[in-house]
Length: 179
Image (cartoon, rainbow, N blue to C red; front, side, top):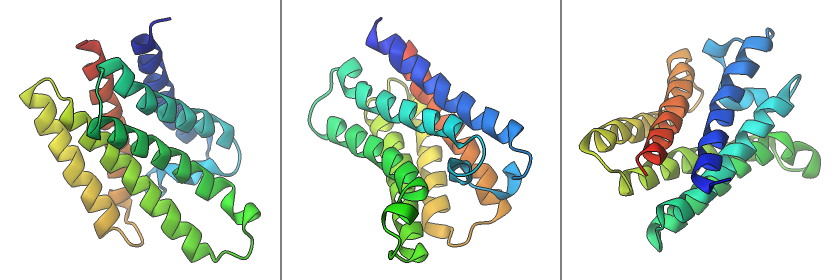
C-alpha cells in the first residue's frame, strides 16, 4: 500500500473515531466535553485507535512530502504531542499515583496544544495553496484561543476544539490528495 493512501486512511480513522465515540457514548455531552474526555471510560478504545492513527499519520507526513529539517521536527513533535495527550489522560493516574491531578491535567493540556499547533503549523509550511494557508491560519488562531485562553473551558471552546480537529484533519487529507 502506498504510504500516502495509508496516511489518508489513518486521518479518516481519526475523524471517524471522534464522531463514533461521541454518538455511542450517551453519558457524555459532546457540547460540554473535550475530545480527550472520551479517552477514559466506556468505548475509550475507539478513541485510542483514533489517536494512534493520527500519531502515525503525522509521522508519515515528512516521508510523503519528502521534507527535511524543521518540517520533519514539527510533524514528529506534533505526533508525540498526540500520544502524550492520550497517555497522560489514560495512564498517568495509575502509573504515577502520587502525581497531583493538576500536574497531569497541565501535561495533558500542554501536549494537546503542542499536537494541535504542531500539526497546523507543519501543514502551513507545506501548504500548496493560499486557501490552505488561510484556513490553517484560522485553525492556528483557534488553537491558540483554545489552549491559551481556555483555563476551565466553556461549551463554545469544546465545540470549537472538535471543529478544529476535524478541520485540521480535513486539510491534511486534502493536502495529501494534492500529491
